[in-house]
Each structure stands twice: as C-alpha cells, then as structure tokens.
Image 1 (cartoon, rainbow, N blue to C red):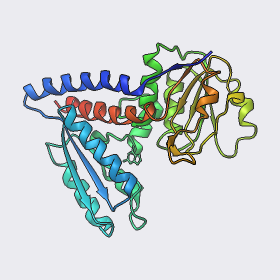
Image 2: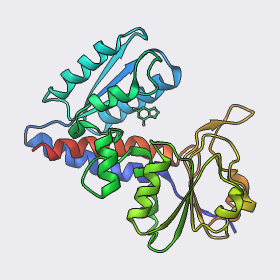
Image 3: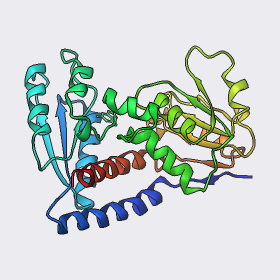
Image 4: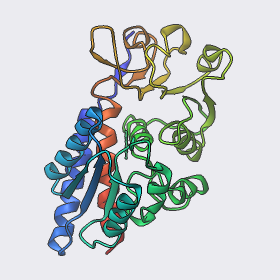
Length: 282
Ligand code: GUN
C-alpha cells in the first residue's frame, strides 16, 4: 500500500489565501503588514531563499523590504540596521538570512532583533516562550510541520514521535511543539545508537538532518506519518529529502514529498508570523 501524500503546496495555498484575507482586513484599518529581509553577502542558496520570501509577501499583499549588503559589512553596521528596523513602524517582522559571513556573530545579531518582530522565532526569548508554552513566534519550519500534521487531523496525544536532528532551527523546536501536543518525544542525532530501533517504534517521524537516505523503509513502522524536512541533491542533481521516498512511501501511512512538502510551508509560516506580528501591534 502506498502512503497518502501530504501536499505542502496545496496546504500553503489554503493558508496563504487566509493570510491575504487577514492582510486586506488590516490594510482597511490602515496597517499593511511589513517584513524586512536582510541578506549579507552573495551565498547563492540564500539569494534564492530571500527572493522567494519577498515574492511570497508580494503575492499575499504583505509589504516587504529586501536589504542587501556586501559580504564585508561590519557587525556594528548590521546591528545598526537591525536597530533601525526595530524602530520602523512600517516593519512588523525582521528576518536576517543565515548563514552570515564568519566575521559576524550571528547569535548577537539575532538577539538584537526585537522579540516582537522575531518572525523567524530564533531569538532566545522566542525559544524560551516555546519551551514554557507562552505566546511567542515559533520557528517557521517546525511550525509548518505541525500544520501539516493538523491538516490530516492527526491526534498526537499519546503517540510516539521521533525527531531525527537536534538543530536550534528545526529539531529542538520540533520536539517541543510535539511535546506540547502531548506526544511522547524522542530526539535522535548523530550520536544515537541504533536509530532504526527507535524509528521503528515511532508513530510519527520527522527527519531533519540534511543527509540523503537517513530514513529507509526498514526503519519505518507500517502506517507511520513521515515528515521530511531535508533539502538535498541526489547524484543527478535533483532535489531530494532525508527520506528514501520511493521505499518509505510503500510502508508509511502518510508522507511529505520533497519538493512540494515542508519547503513551501516554511515560507507560508513566515507570512503567518509576520501577519500575526502586525495584528498583535494593533
Ligand atoms: N537560512 C536557512 N533557513 C533560514 C530561515 O528559515 N531563516 C533564516 N533567517 N535564515 C535561514
């Protein structure tokens, strides 16, 4: 039996239509939700990401500003730009694209963003809010994964969720979000012994490692939900995730494809966070 696909493009269209409607409502009250995207240097992948983010804003009726700087921008100059954006009433969300050049302390820059405008959810205040169940912005990728689970009406209470990967951006916040929905959560990482023994017990598996074929069919319990956060290239240069899609789809109950799964959801949740930042400011 083949798994049901969780279509990130279709779900994104639905959620973005709601964002556009709410943005129009805010505009009628004189507030246009605004996102500032800051890019330092010329990392080709980052250039594509920021272009997609800015375009998504335009398509949903959000105001966006793209600030591009040369790779030799000083840390002090970047901090000054963040400060100016913190105080700009037309900007409700600030995103500084990572990675930053090596001479800039990325954490220092993230901590300089006002938590009220931290639509990436990377500030320690946002991380602390997620950890304690207080209101705050959730990181977009794991937030998008939660929306995908919600879209299939999946009840997490009492289920065993295994998260593969422990990054601050995906793995750790993902585990906290699943925990908040009363799942029993296991976090696996490069030091985990016998990954398959753990994933085979899982009702939900989130793969967020950044390496192909981390999860193969023999590691999946029949009927499990498999969410693939990976974004890799195969030998032919084609985009692929962390999951052996062809094999795992024959065992899983639900699966997200790459491309067309988590990827579009990440940008969608950025729009949602920006809209909410503007709504909170009213
Ligand atoms: N680089 C890769 N993904 C992201 C993201 O979601 N936000 C930021 N700021 N940088 C990134």
